[in-house]
Length: 242
Image (cartoon, rainbow, N blue to C red; front, side):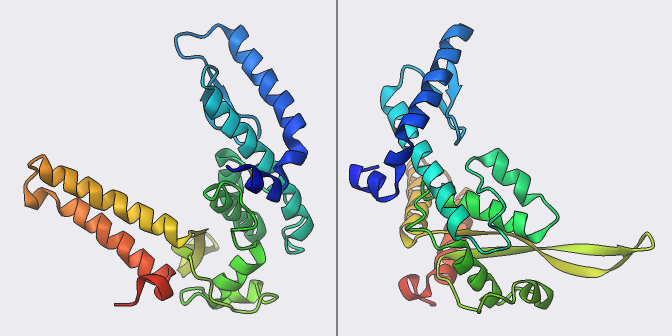
């Protein structure tokens, strides 16, 4: 992360606090005398690090600082239904909210995980309100969910991926008709999708060069087709509809 980006996101305001937390974690790992791989957990964001890898630790310190800035920003700008929920900054906290039965914790959990994938760049990532508008506009969103999010005007959001699950409602201990429920959502930049696509293409080429039979390359072809379809659906203006 460049210095300008770090300051742009307000990470510098949390540097001292994060430095103290990292110093405590590094000391804990040293005193634990765990060998041969003494690993620590980055405060706030939870990533593993080796105490000998100063470059990695420096990056994690900055990410942790920016994560705190994102959490503060979220508290000040989130929709009223989500403002009392602390933005999760690590995978376990995201998963805990994603598994909540109530809508707003689930939305915040998904949003937190999506924000992690762009390294907490809350100025790059669409706001939760924008994601909710995109969810309302999504072709597969059921009417009851649109009603719960009626405060948001439907507005398609490029880069937003939404998935649903089929569950059964139970009355008097008996199942009644399937209902479509929100499985989650995720936002990607076009560069993220293009990078994923290229990684699968390179993997297939390496497998081909290593002599893997064509009929065994089918799984690679399926993954490439899936990512290409995601690109067309998420960014029709960039990846095209054909």
